[in-house]
Length: 297
Image (tube, rainbow, N blue to C red; front, side, top):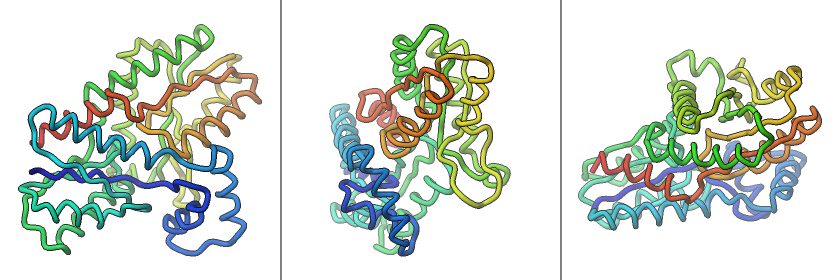
């Protein structure tokens, strides 16, 4: 049996989880006001992030697709900031004495700050637990043909119901520019996937804007999604199709940052807002993950 350990960020699964979750991410106790603000945001998206449920479904579907193709694999799921943790996933994999182990992140893009940290945590756990099986890792899978096709189909569907001629705004999570300057491939990988998706969808006009910028660490990637919306308004554009291509599954950064905050900004600027759906547990994203794994098999 070959063990595949899928790695992700994690998310709270009910309102009572929000406090413990954000404190795990911060690495410290937070003042009540900040916790209350986080709880209020989750309340606005229904009180729960669907990310963990989607990740569990992706793991199950990936295992089934690979085994239906004649492989002998078992997929384990580990979250850096929620349950099951990365250490738990690695321990569960080793308990079944795999002949090989493949580490893979749920995000298709590699950044040292995200995927790099997930993979490092898993590798350290394997050493700590005395693993002797060969280990391979998938750093990124953003150019898989099935992923591009899935993104393109989602974009075509959204554009079909948007006002005619609406430009597309692709968005992805921002990073400090200093990380990119030091050689992090994340921004270039996102741009490559955007270009391939736009070509596959036949999108004549598009922009890339960075969203969900953090605090500190100097200048972050530009332009922001907010900057692009402002530019479109200044040009007299009346509609936009937003595609959060940086994410394969819905969570706070799509359901709140895009669907609430970004949509409000667009509407305040007089721009009709449409959003392409995330791939979530679609066959396209599972097939893309399977293709990346099969190359390691």
